[in-house]
Image (cartoon, rainbow, N blue to C red; front, side, top):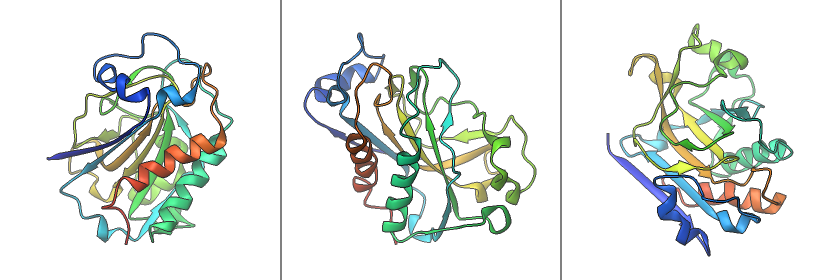
Length: 214
């Protein structure tokens, strides 16, 4: 599979980008502008024009790690993803447990330094009933990332992923992620972020992905 990576850098984040490729930040930033980094990834072999409906679990899932994650923005994060998906012309499926959807938008936060594309499995398969539409699931199921990225993100990052459940079985016990967006570090307890800054980061994920939309 080919990979495509888009990124948006501003101010001090430009100097930090090289560090992100191998390790976490050497010290805790004091302001979200020091982490003004948004990256998007996509499966270049996938036709996004075929997507019509999406499902969005009403939960921001936590990846395994420390407990140091700011959760006060969960509702905002989900609403921003909804706003962008509908703005691109996709229709939200109100009853995915019975009707399914073309893609499932999975939103999660990291609790520790993590290499994107290195998630062996997620702890949420049994926590959202919508997965049942595609048949029984086992906790061992996970996600597959066509882009094989080695970019490292710091504690408190937001991950937005477009999962394709219809491709179940095409890569063993893993589902392909067709698109992913990451807002780096904004939920770390040591960072003072605002609602506008969180929303802006999510909006940039979609804005820098022109292949999305109908």
